[in-house]
Length: 136
View 1 (tube, rainbow, N blue to C red):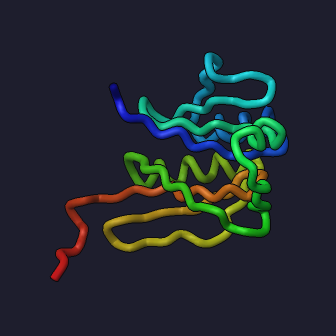
View 2: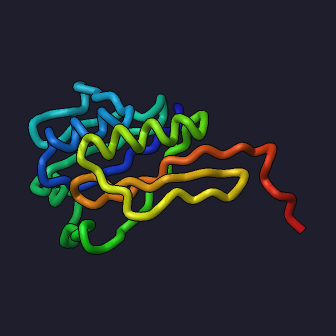
């Protein structure tokens, strides 16, 4: 069995969020979607489940975090080039996302951060492994 990652996030408006994630480059898998949740595909092994608060609450007894004012997690997605980092983030900004901090450039890795309508934080990054500094 192939190992896969499903990231479940609570959103206020499932359709608005689906449109935003589509602009970032995700595609919708209707097989795992309904009126309360949308399965968004990043790759063959990475999926983001956008669930309205009512459906998300069925998976936990804890209250749903206010991610607009508090950070719960930072999700990072790699892309194939720095140009692609800029393309993904710019499309997300045009779709209504926000960029809470400026570009981070570590020489071997460049990343930009974007938040969705509900404040979920995503780092879109490119890393050139040949430029990673040696440890020691």
